[in-house]
Length: 80
Image 1 (cartoon, rainbow, N blue to C red):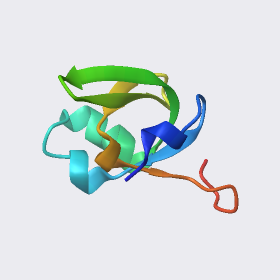
Image 2 (image 1 turned 45 degrees about the vertical axis):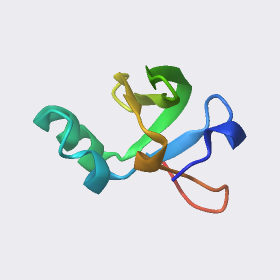
Image 3 (image 1 turned 90 degrees about the vertical axis):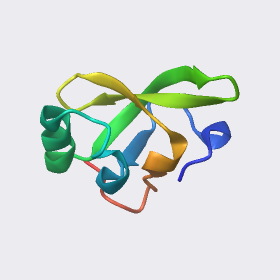
């Protein structure tokens, strides 16, 4: 899980497929399976007291995720 307060724009985040597969369309699941990373491009209010993180995927598609569906990629790990 990421802490959105410590993230910066254009940071690469990893999508946890097991946490999103029950709510996303099959085609998007396939995209994430092949390349489970996205670039943080913004935030989206999803209810009264939380928000989602908007990622741009490798194919240019933009979609949002909850914080607990993502993890940070650290500089010493290969991400893309």
